[in-house]
Image (cartoon, rainbow, N blue to C red; front, side):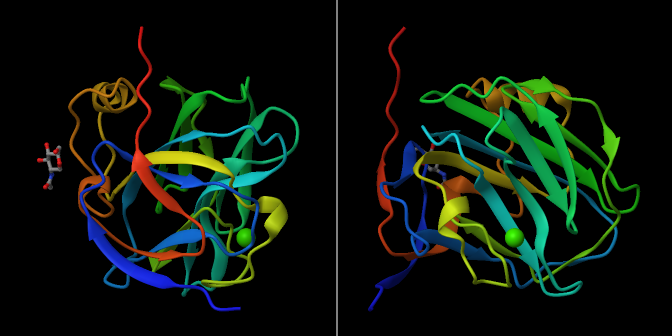
Length: 217
Ligand SMILES: *[C@@H]1O[C@H](CO)[C@@H](O)[C@H](O)[C@H]1NC(C)=O
Ligand SMILES: [Ca+2]
């Protein structure tokens, strides 16, 4: 097989990624090689739309040291209505009403030193809980696939099929009001680590960059 790999730097404002078929190849990856963080807080968020009821990854970040394919992973954890967060292979799973064929926003905050994490689902904060202390070294982010090794070993049964937009990552935690603004599609401070409005990424396989479908009220 030959897969066309493209490195793109683009302002994706108003755009979304469409993953149109179940594969273990289609993905967009972002290398954050400059990041070596020992003590920090961070916040990761995205919007997604899918009809998958099985497990799937919404954000897969692998780290080189500690060598962890599940350095920071957000996604649907099981076939039941749950959303999960994994840090350094430790999981935090919440039962939620995960409606299919509708846009959902998911945000997670995590402090590397305290090990405390919190998920926000559609703008509603869930309980803050201890997950794991860790560090992040040379993170590699994959959208569309779930890494089972650093940058590889994608499992088709954990792949994402659907649309995804507005992926941001901050190395600090926004105020609850700013998180609400993000969820409400209002003005918010774009990610300083990963910014959807200025994203340098590598596209592999069948991923389309399309205009966001706006809903009329
Ligand atoms: C990206 O595009 C949007 C909409 O066209 C614009 O408002 C924004 O300033 C642009 N951002 C950057 C970083 O160029
Ligand atoms: Ca994994």
